[in-house]
Amino acid sequence: MSESQDPPPEVLRNLDVISRLDQAPLVEITGIVDEGLGGIRVGGCSQLTALWKLLPWRVGDEAVSSKPLRVRKLVNDAEFSRLGDLLARGSIVKLQARLIDEAEMDHATALLEKVLATDCEDPALESAAEEIQPCQMYQDEQFGEFYLEPGGVAVAADVEWNGQEITLFLPAQKDAILPAAAQARRLWADSPQWDQRAREFATVRLLPLKNTTWLESNEPPIAAEDFGKRLGLESLEVTDTGEFAFVFDDDGMFQEHLIVVRGTLEQGFSEAELAG
Image 1: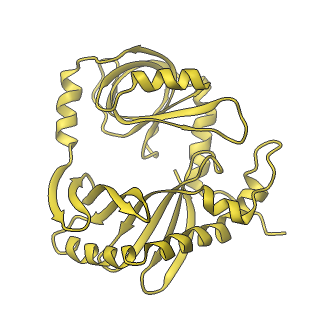
Image 2: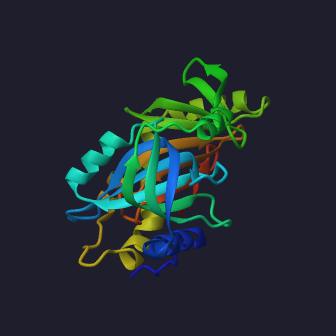
């Protein structure tokens, strides 16, 4: 039997925050829907966890926060559909929710109690959103338009990879973005093989952790051939020196955490880990 592995510290912190949400203070939050509604269903459960992100946002009339706020709620299919109609990306919504916002976390977390209003007006939020709005900085013949985001990252959305659309991240520094794009082209030139190898590497490294530590009640162990197929590639990060990171959605296998598989073009894969 494979040796059990402990979850990374950041995963434990996230799980601790989620476990405390029921007892968190109930506040009124106004924010801009930065990412529309998504959902995670574990196994054959009749309910699913609805997830979306607000950025920027604020509590009541307090100062605007530019830290991402991830909002969640356990819902049935009908409730999920209604939330999808209410949470249009880019709209300003007002929520009643239980909030945990701790300095050591890179995002805040909230548990929705009620949607109070949609299509709101809030000049302070709109002004803050304009300040963090990405600006176009580079046009690539293969990957399209790159936009600058906070933290010195260049982002291209809806880039085709192995028959699907993902997001590509490159370093935004002037002397790094062109070499990084060239390194990315090396990955794209053999995308089917790199995609398969990333999934196989994640399976070898993380399947024992799933089957010994992360199984839900009455959930059967996951077979190796199924683990990789369940991973949904969300993005690729590539540097000018040929380092890369495949970022996968976990399909609920690790309670909604991302799976990051790292390596280099020259030496192959080296690390697979859970991220917040």
